[in-house]
Image (cartoon, rainbow, N blue to C red):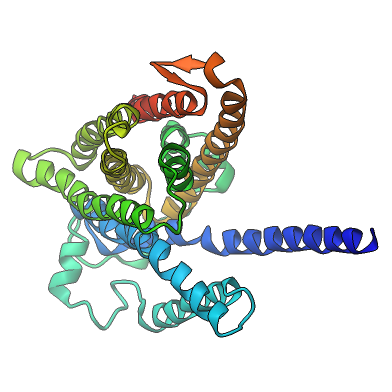
Length: 354
């Protein structure tokens, strides 16, 4: 009895410590995207920002593509040589990479007007959106819009709603796809076939999403469209990609490769959408306020992600308990619940665009 109580106490403390460390990670991670979007606006004219955002945004997909392969191998290696359970060193090594990246960032990054790597011609191109082509003077420096005042603009709420409806779809598939392959096809996350399916999914996301960032540039340069109008047309096209989720469950009866490919298309649509919706902030607000608005919208996206992941988990448990008593589109129990959530995900982007 004493041993059981001690084990429970240690397990409980460990969970809370893990949550504390994960929260600290989230605090540090949260600043990355607002800063990255602001840097993109500083170094690119409006017509190029979606493509630049798509390229750096693909880095997240590359990480997601590499992690299911690299991290289990790291954990297995360190466990084999007796260093804890192996996972501890996997956390340490991946975390240490962030400090290496930060060192390069602090060393290399400067604003375009201050960077020794930007020549006059490049600076003129970067500032080509300005009414005057000469280098901005301090007198033209924009004032930052206050945090609470940002909420008085309808453009802020457009960004908030767009992020709330769509970020959750990305995080749903990111979080639940491994469980989906296990529930539907009996493939655990360390199964070689499951790893191949996940790798294929993220490879599709990575390569197609970069092309998605180029589409508004094409509209602007070839069609002569205003940057914002070109971006909105591109986003409407990408909003139809997630409809592919409707076919994931039915096609899964043939092979698990079909859901992997279709979910990959949904993910590519999301990343292309994401690159453009981030860029709309720089279309609508001065550079000095881009980080603030991006942070506000990202918070809304986080709330949407929390809602869909939590509610999906509760829904899946309930549907599994119901079994054959719960049906939807010919599916029963938990598979039926997956189909319901896939249907919600398929229309979220069209609602967000509207």
